[in-house]
Image (cartoon, rainbow, N blue to C red):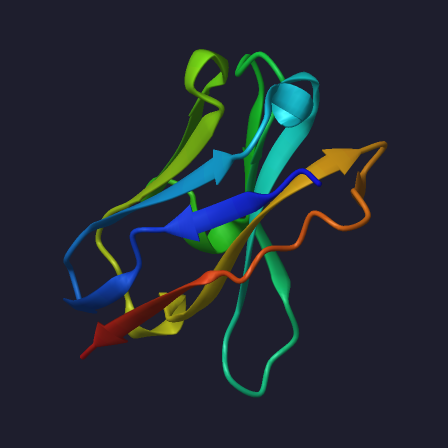
Length: 119
């Protein structure tokens, strides 16, 4: 079974930076758009950013534009999310997923990685 494993979360002060990683257990996701979602306590899971299979197209939710950068390296089966100028409202559990036709691929949700931003 293909797995996506997120890492890199932690506690950071507002204004700080974190770099999240998403490692796929196989090359199966290399042909798909990949995305990051996040879920804050008591809130619904929301889209953060996505990147096309070859990295040529990226998309961000307005709240993170200019602060977050998504990237991938298919030779390493890995995707990243560089998060700068973090705000308390960026806190939550971050998940990486594969996507096809605008929908999350079944079974691609991992355990997520926790991001905590102190004021």
